Length: 258
Image 1: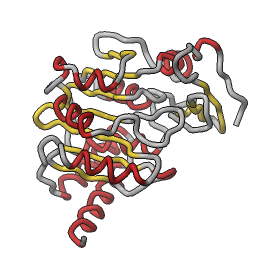
Image 2: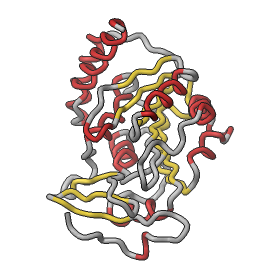
Image 3: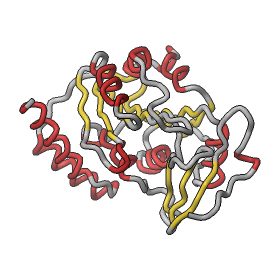
């Protein structure tokens, strides 16, 4: 990879500095360490580059037209940009604690400025989900909260997941990335299952990322409908949704066998 391209603009004290590297046409975000916090293919800035980040869009199988999409943890803004561009009738919000991340996303990852539909806020994700003004108003909640060491989610307590649940509308869905030490997996899954009506996850992808889908109200799952929807997602969003349906099918079979 190229040498770090950090500047003082992305190194405000009190937070990890935001830096980038580039390799074979892909720009990577780091927080002062070698851990990759996000990526963007430079000639396709609005596409989602990383496989696990694509999988965070798993909710599209169940909701084709959300009114309010929220991202907790901005990363390289891949999900926020994608939702903003591809769901023009939706409000898109993001909560990011590190001002260096917000600044570098605007400067190096083509995050557009806030407008009537886009609201990227410098704030703690816990404060966002605990705010009564947000309760019952979020259709899709995408959670990807990691610090510079990436040992596990920054927020994973029962109180945090309860607050996420409270933010969701009646048929709201949360997707979250569970990554880090293996001990984190069961803790996170148990805490989510204690709160949500239904929790499922897809098989592990590269670098031990597991994407979890949590429903405020368990849906009826008809795989013929999901495969039909997957075809629509591939055509309209160019996301590999059929593989997601296959993963859900495998997950359900494994659960029944166990």
